[in-house]
Length: 342
Image (cartoon, rainbow, N blue to C red; front, side, top):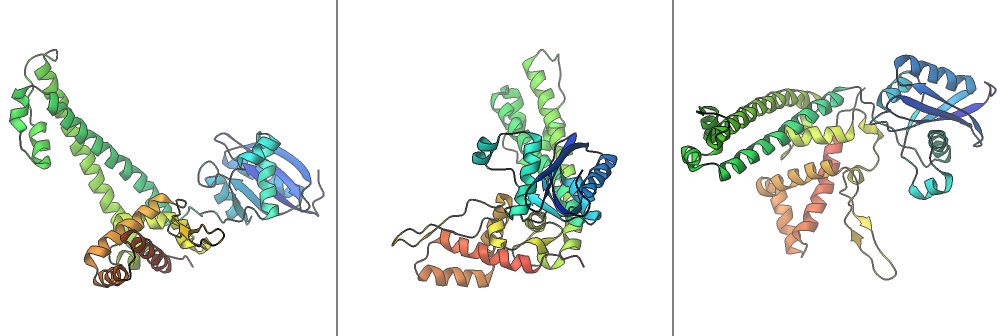
């Protein structure tokens, strides 16, 4: 047991059932390691164990957005500085091996060396509520698309008697007509089986449509409440605003490089007498997609953006490069309007 008068740094490798914790001192010496259950009582024992080693300067936690989310919330509520730690790179793992204690010590060492310095999302405000609802909505939209694709595939191979009943109908009328189908005969008959399948798929489509509509209503209220100025921007809707809020989190003041976070900042790729930049394929790709949607809308409907595009096109810049510039501008504009808790 280390002296309680020394300063220590904790490292935690998170898992579904057990968290592995390790402690090092300020010169990197390994002091101890232990595992704890992923329960409220386990979190309290973990914190008591860390404080028994010495004064806890910080705790590096892997997976603050997954298995370590609740642990990070608990430690932060107890006044412990939580640092987000990425998993070690493959080269380090090949040299040091792979085990839970090794990963826990590596997390603590990353905090001590300064390699890990990110502040995790708090995940305790309205943005976290928006994220949870958008998860359900996104899966419902995906299932709705799959359902209509299955309906069209079945109609392609359906008997002509079934196809002729719904031929040429637009999607909304097609779904309504399929829900009113009345199968006759036995399920062993292909015509009867196709009618049953189409009716069930149409009813599933209607249920998913109602679920998406309900989620849209809830999300519109939450997003407008969280960032009314953001929703008021030209080209920004509930979906794009919700995604940008989720990317920033409930504590956007932790961010330093807004365009890098969204993958909109170019990456230097110069060498020798060649000076150029390449496309940044990192960052949050969903946030990059939201910026892309906003830029597309503005290029078509926003007069100021259209004038900018015309001017830059006259200077010889390609449309793709213009859109990259606009993405960076929108990222800076959005960041200024993100909600900041007092």
